[in-house]
Length: 306
Image (tube, rainbow, N blue to C red; front, side, top):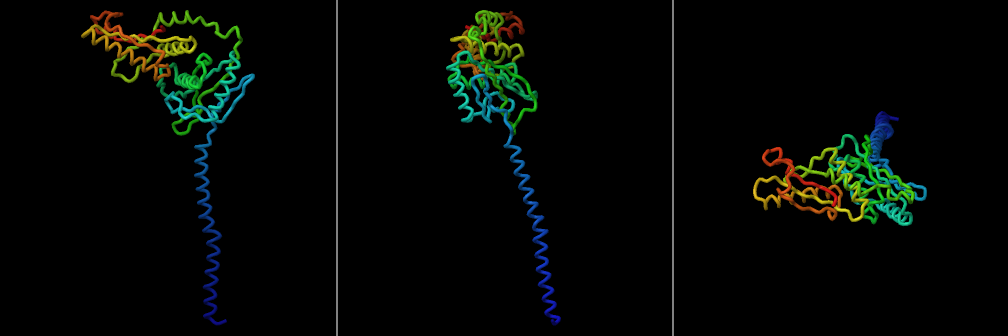
């Protein structure tokens, strides 16, 4: 073999060996790196989408239904996110048929919220407001509101996807004995108690919200419970003003305040048809209109049970 041939053979062998080593090590590193990156991305997506929801469970002695979905809410909000899934609606429809055949059954709905959420509702806590909104969805599907009890609790570290809270609602079927179907609640006495210390709201008509005390929030919950359980019950919202200005204008202002209070309650799940509004203008003061403090107390809306 001459020198030139040996030289060319050496070059060829170098190219072959170099190609082999590149494919075996460099390409494998590059491809494996891409694979790991893709796998990492896939895991990230799965971690976001494959969240274990608080399931929709309706379990009792004679009725059982469960699906992997549940009601969802945006953080700091109590309105159910729509649309509701078909599997959820199927369970609700099945429960409706069961209730129709078993009138002594009720459903306890417990809503949850985290301690860092702002209570944007008129109820004692955001969990209670969520339970009430879920109840209203059941009612929209043909249930009587009297078939439900609602409660709310604070529970931290709830499952979330971005700003959506997943399934913060639990359910418990209650088997009520026939003799206790009225729950032995004296609704007339409850009405008298509520009206003796009515929900009284002080605010300016230009405001878009009402700051409620804990006591007022409980009053709202009591009013809703009464409406849910007493057929034909309605609320009366009466607006009042101080005596500054023209009486006709004040009467109109009082009605605007009553309408505002009504709309506020409607945003919190009370049926508009169950609230009647009227105005007394400056005619029924509860304090001295000669002082600023007295005038402020007279500018109010009073909500009672009719």
